[in-house]
Image (cartoon, rainbow over all chains, first blue to last red; front, side, top):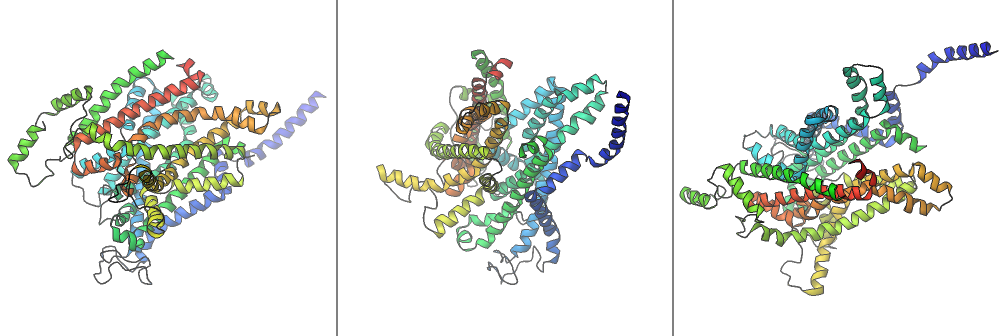
Length: 315
Length: 319
């Protein structure tokens, strides 16, 4: 009797195993599915892709060139030829907005890449090794975070300006500046994550199983930090775009003639442009706003999709 | 507890020295200074002035001199305003403090109230609407939000003054003065609250949701307690724990002055002299002010740790 029960069960199990293996998606597939079901987040993802493509491709279809000035068409309000009007040199605001979008998006993405790489490496080293390395890295991170960020940016900007960057390469200078400020926060987060993961039972299991430390680190510990890394990286892009705009607005970031969404809004610093010519400073502001809100909503969606704890709470 | 505070206090000392060194080196190494910026000076006069202010000395002796003065409570002497830095800060910092305190009370209140209601009914209509509004407010570039507020409420509608702290040329006193300042406060406060309330509300809501999911809340409900008691007495107290540390981090923000908001609204606060000093390369003011903020940041972290240890006995035991 027991034998037959056993065999039934076993047959049943044997029959189910291949099927289960087929239908159980990997964690990434599950996350992607959860994200796809989040309509807001998907909408924002598509919106961001559309904006990026528009900024890259758009200027080629525009009849106006960025540096084409037109003394007869100065400060014109939006009309059929110039969809968003013209600025004080007669340049087409719409074309400049797209070109500025390229710069602002590049700054956002590259700053994210640099600061996340820096923060992740230092945070991981600090959390995994502990001891002296941890102390030095964390004290240094504390020190950078102690000094208010805007003055620090301004001083760094002044120091780097002395190196005589051309307006185009100032973009990279801004990226370096923003990354140098951003990494401590990320390093702290990653370190905290690794410290807590290291104490979990599954890490104890890898030790008990006698896995090599390389496999424990790269096969088990680090992959578990990826979800938080993805969310952090998304938010870092939004942060970088906002910081760049503030810097450029203060005249310390990307400088004209290279357009960025921040420095286009500089027009609002003149009273007449501010009061009478909203087409000069409204569009870049709205562009930043839409981009950042889309990134934030997407990041939130990613957090929900990647964090199993959040999913459970929804039911 | 006393040992804990003492140990943390001792840890701040090397941190303060490192911060002062870093700040000094940053500003000392920044190209150009107040005297270089004045092109009407002859080379000889510039050299005289540099000698007068000790700018011709080697870096290390300048640092030690500055540090020595600091230890005696002397923040330095402003080159641009020709008054002691501490006096200058005292003049402007309280305007920033007024603005920041009102904004802070408001956004903490909003964040707590919204966080509680959202957590009581998660994923309800209210919760969704609030999260959309929060994301929108968080995603504004500071200056763009300020400019929009000025454009709509001051320029187009004429409801509120454009900027400053009192009407131009006003010599109002007493009640009239208070009303004027209040009117000038509205827009900057709204801007600050919108920009700051978002992350705090999100943080608080997440913290509430974490707590509401715990077993002791289920127990409280199972005992038949009213929902209000469960939320306000049992959940709220525990959810407030991680939030308390944030209070400590707010400390520097109360005095630093919101640089961009104050600039756009022309508010005579610390952020305003900060930007002025940057433009004029008035390094004594910048160094003194930055160090003051660094001290407040370190102090804020200390307060956060102490508050946390005070509120959560588990932390005290572990350390």
